[in-house]
Image 1 (cartoon, one colour):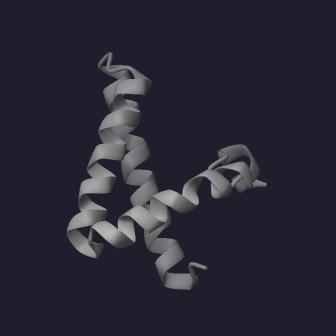
Image 2 (cartoon, one colour):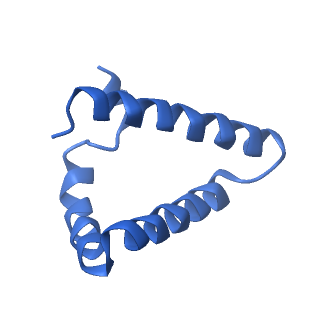
Length: 78
């Protein structure tokens, strides 16, 4: 679980990404292209900082986390 200061830093980071995402959409970049580019950037950063195995383990846990609503903004905001 993410706590206090780390959660706040992640929220600020998400706000920066959302701002850049919105600007790119305003410039005509499709949401699907943005999603693919964002995933690529995130995964390459995770591999660089945490290694291939740790990143692969995180990715392997995603299906269940997605099914449980961790990545559903409407559910997360409630």
